[in-house]
Amino acid sequence: MKILVTGGTGYIGSHTVVELQQSGYEVVIVDNLCNSTAEVVNSIEKITGVKPDFEKFDLTDPDRTKDFFERYDISGVIHFAAYKTVPESVKTPLKYYRNNLLSLLNLLACMKDSKVAYFVFSSSCTVYGQPDLLPVNEDAPIKKAVSPYGNTKQISEEIIEDTVKAHGLKAILLRYFNPIGAHESALIGELPLGIPDNLMPYITQTAIGKRSGLNVYGDDYNTPDGTAIRDYIHVVDLAKAHVIAVDRLLAGKKKENFEVFNLGTGNGFSVMEVIRSFEKGSGVKLNYKITNRRTGDIEKVWADTNYANKELGWKAEKTLDEMTLSAWNWEKAIQALA
Ligand code: NAD
Ligand code: WQD
Image (cartoon, rainbow, N blue to C red; front, side):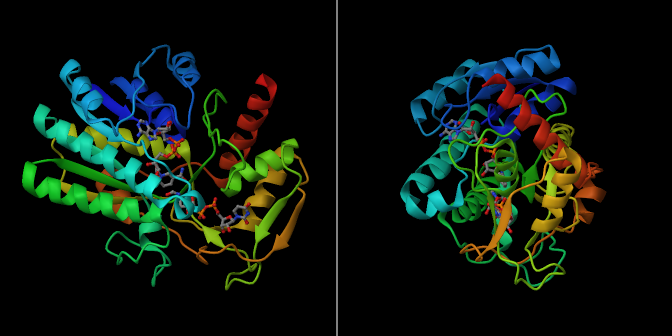
């Protein structure tokens, strides 16, 4: 069983490749390395003892994608490859629509021509915006996207749904909440290029001295400590859900040909709770200050995970302390290599 993992040298993709290999799947990665490095392939081999096949090309290129499908016998596809930075997408929307939508269209067309039916897609809790009800379940209304990035996820979901109806594709869409942390080996993790936008890498980079201080964006939210709440999930828990999704598709266990699952822990933590967890595990006192809210941020969101727990037989296991400590161990490992 060979699984194509697009974006497999990236953050979530690399952790998923490890879990797939450890569950007995063969993997071929396609990545153009626009946000990752080929060294990740060696790190995966160090963890699993198996070097995944790796092809470097851009999935927005229809000819290269077609040529790939002609050379490989693929059982299913997990599609991670995309641009993912929200503020950058506001500044350069066409770059985001082009990359995220063309790569999806090329893939789906090649899958149709090569009769590859099984597809797992990286979606995001961003499609819910600020939900009316918490915890948010999969039936909650999709709110108008606040960023071009979020809109690419909404449009992608619609493209996949239409392809399922017309061409017999069988798809599982996974809506991730806030993935953080790194593999326990500290051989793979998140490698943000430039200044990170996300909380966890900003915390670890501040603690290690790459950034002078963390801004906490607002303490006047309607939450117990005034800082915003998210559902942080360990990337390894997230990766494991992808293996289950692939198993489910290949074993024909799905209920519908188009299924959507929330991937979170079901628990919300505030920014201050994440900082305290980090400080406790690392022993580092973090330099932070409270600033204004960040434009576009929602107040609070966490997942209703009942459907994923029941249907997939999957549950996130790792605690917030395990997440923040693993992120810190990864930051120290990068520092040691530099
Ligand atoms: P990442 O940037 O670490 O990984 C994405 C990988 O895709 C990178 O290695 C990049 O080089 C590659 N890529 C991008 N465009 C490509 C193209 N046209 N052709 C070939 N390769 C290409 O990102 P990640 O955090 O691992 O995210 C993976 C997926 O999960 C993305 O679709 C992202 O939108 C989604 N997602 C991420 C988060 C998050 O917080 N990290 C949350 C929800 C959803
Ligand atoms: C978390 C909390 C910030 C940085 C983003 C995308 C979303 C999804 C996940 C892909 C918020 C606060 C952050 C900092 C801070 N990605 N914060 N200081 O915004 O929930 O979601 O990543 O699909 O689409 O929007 O994650 O990690 O940026 O922020 O106080 O320096 O931390 O205000 O409350 P977010 P985040």
